[in-house]
Length: 149
Image (cartoon, rainbow, N blue to C red; front, side, top):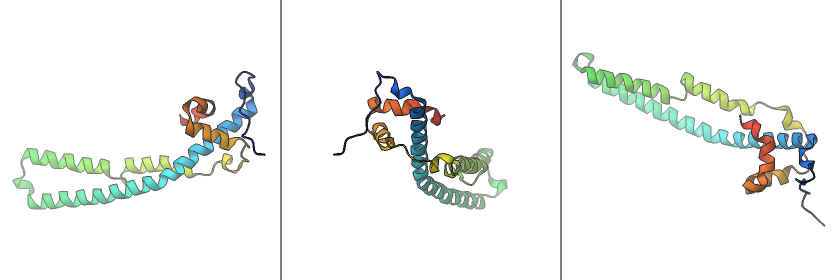
């Protein structure tokens, strides 16, 4: 007959055993890596959309500038065009800033030794606690919370 895994007793102090803490930390790291990996597709779609939008904005600015030769532009219009170019550069996912963001996000895909380690038999139970309840999930997050920093 199947029985749910035994939850460590808070009163017994068993939940502080170093082996349990390490196992929960590894499980938390795996869970965070899995969630971040799943988010990569969303990130790619967002960056692709921003790249397309950036190209449209640059085309618009080029057309606008073509309609207004520099000698016919007011100082205000020149200032606005300068601002618009800076805005587009900040929005561009292929700018230095955008690529730096991508590099940070890509780090999660680098293989980690924890990926190949055997899972603790209670790992699914801890994952369920984390997903379903802030009260019971406290134990799992308390051991893995430092991984978010």
